[in-house]
Image (tube, helix red, strand yellow):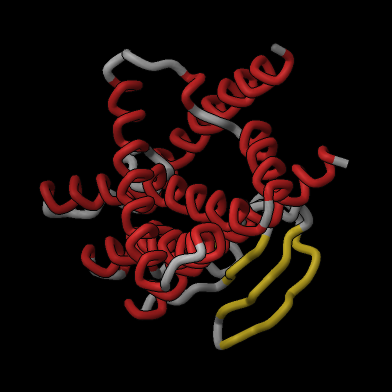
Length: 252
């Protein structure tokens, strides 16, 4: 039963925070006048099983694997229809920042009822506790990353899908307030990690925009594809290593 709770809690919480992240990209794109052709709930590379809704040029779809989500700026994979690269650098930067920003705001909002229910204080006290928790998680995440890059920490500091599923199950079993707090921490962590200047992440896209500004000319869609694909492959490899450490922690 505990395994079922962990898996369900992981799918629900992870899907929710990714959905919030992608919704931030979606709204920022709409604000910048960049068309979004698909807003999908589910793992990007899994088959589409349903079109839930259509609004203007955007299809809201559901994928087979109920984990994650994405927004697509291309119509039917046609790179000629890729409008994102036609937008200004400032607009593209706002679209990249939109996802992590929504994760931060969502985390703060989720922390409030978590503290309100757990501490039993006033709304103002819950807001203050939420702001403090927000700062502590951000500071802790950057400190952990700093130690890792300085060679003072190992991969055991990170958790992959298995580790996150275990923590989600523990939070769900502890009660609603703990699950809300865990959801906020996960959302905040997702937002911060996506701002890292790593190819394929939002921070990597911002770094490429900075390079474009310094060169005073665009890199081109093909260069973005190669860089992002390389980043995704490296990220998958890193995820495998982290997952392996999760398994070692469980068996030990």
